[in-house]
Amino acid sequence: MQQQDEYIPPKVWVWEQQNGGAFASINRPVAGATHEKTLPTGQHPLQLYSLATPNGVKVTIMLEELLEAGFSGADYDAWLVSIRDGDQFGSGFVAINPNSKIPALVDRSVQPELRVFESGNILLYLAEKFGAFLPTTLAERTEVLNWLFWQMGSAPFLGGGFGHFYAYAPQKFEYAINRYAMESKRQLDVLERQLAVQPYVAGQAYSIADIAIWPWYGALVLGRLYNAAEFLEVQSYPNLQRWAKTIDARPAVQRGVKVNRNWGEPHEQLPERHSAADFLATPKK
Image (cartoon, rainbow, N blue to C red; front, top):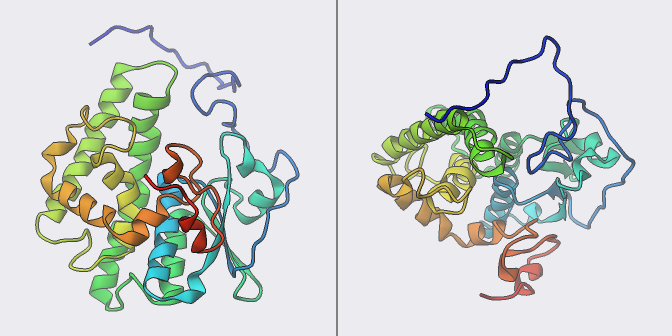
């Protein structure tokens, strides 16, 4: 193992603002708003404030799946929140998510209107609101929620752990990358074994468990996350590959991954979404 200078923690931790890394300019150890900024509001009852990170994509896929299934009440406005620019610390955003993380949703179809934050909770809220993508029998519902909460607890090791140290950290540290690569592969194996015996993660039917897990682990095995497909040998998970490709082919998923995206090829981007017609205006491949 490569030798590196040992870090000896100080007796009291001190915030060094220029600590490097892709998101150093917006990371900080305190909460609350840093500036006044009113959030825009569109015509639909559902207002989404987000960015097309894996957690954001969960919600736009869910909304597009609901619309694909015929739930017109799921029509929504999606507003871009640029986390690199610190939009999540604006006063309007902090009012709907005190944790300053995307995505956040406001449901104006109820009075008083409701704020909904944390991506897993937004999926659960929408599934219950519209009665879709969540079974009603106790056993099946419990199994879907098992995997929904598995994703919420597991993804920080993949994103904040492996993804940060492998792709975003200003320096590469062998111990950190190895530690989180091991855990990421263990999680991939959990899914591989689960998908060996059934078509979807929580059973025979597509559910919010798949919608939550696919933007992280599906994107990873399809080679779209952290440029780490070869490093993690994602081709060694054939059942996970099959599942990822099946979901990738869904029209609602293909729309959902574009929403609140402002990077990549022009045909991959739809920074804001206010109607279904917005997808027709995006450039073709």
